[in-house]
Amino acid sequence: MQSGKITYVLITPARNEEAYIEKTIQAVAAQTILPRKWIIVSDGSTDRTDDIVKKYLPDHPWIELIRMPEHRDRHFAAKVMCFKAGYEKVKNTEHDIIGSLDADITFEPDYFEFLLRKLADFPELGVVGTPFVEGSAHYDYRFTNIEHVSGACQMFRRECFEDIGGYIPNKGGGIDWIAVTTARMKGWKTRTYTEKTCIHHRIIG
Image (cartoon, rainbow, N blue to C red):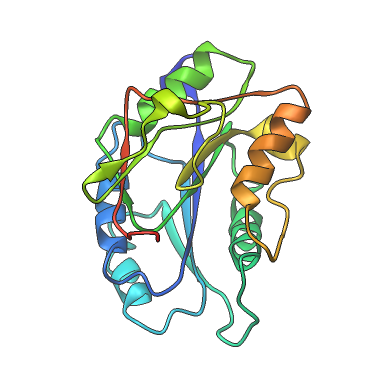
């Protein structure tokens, strides 16, 4: 399977991301291989997040905005609820790869082409990604297990995603780690490729 023939969809949960989401939209729109569909799920945003996304819809028909109710209990599992709502919109769309992308991430124009090529070349791969740079620091993957894939951008082979049952709600967090660990337990390979990085604009911690 050639990377140029692999189809992928993206799902981005977003909660009050007016400071960053436009950069993410521009980064995705500049990709050498565009997603078949990109669902941005506004989790009851109260800032300009929705308006910023709407500005791009007329010229990018493959982007769709949906909005979750404002009055819900919010915890780490909220991301799963948003992701599931987004997946309902794309599950009947032809795609080989499902990407979970945070709303404050940017990358080079060939970022997804690079990851799609890895998935095309190695059919045993179930989840792939790259390290992310946060501010002026970055993770040193010489001392980290590269079998873990950061939740900032996780690309799942569709068969793997369905095999693990997607993201599992967990109020305590760790849903990204649970997904990757479950994939490995079911026999899939997972890999972070350090040849590329993405930029995480919101400082975590």
